[in-house]
Image (cartoon, rainbow over all chains, first blue to last red; front, top):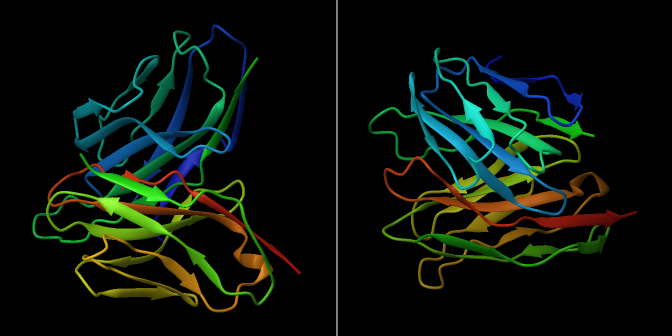
Length: 116
Length: 112
């Protein structure tokens, strides 16, 4: 079955450490996204990528970095510069095929990051 | 810019009650509209969608109709179950944009 995997499900880090969250998809989607979700809050876009080797900042990119070296993979690094990194992180993807009218997003199961 | 407004939660219902979660939007052009559901501790899943005016999306007993005249896409279900307890997100995507716009989500709690 096609889908998006995120690992690990739970991640604990000490303040001041960088940490990388994994996101892999086998849906053959071109576009991938990272969102942050805080308790009782909606989704906030961190970064997105429309194609391999290209990505753009979302609304809250400060303190985060990404890479897109392969179509299937879009890892997110939470750096020590991120002031409040504890949150639930969601990866998503969607097709970017021309002529596709409806482009719903497919989401991974999420990674809950706790920094103490 | 685009925006999606959902009713504030939590919405608390008894099992078998009728559900309505309101969603209104502002957008340029003719957006596609979506409802996503998020169960506790999980990612979002697409619940239903509609692509043009008067389209009705439906899935698992949930329905929503794309109302262009009122710019609304309200989610309804005739008889909710405890297992429907989740957070529901309304969203839109305009034209060729890669970035969807999400509402803040509405939490639904269904009691037995």
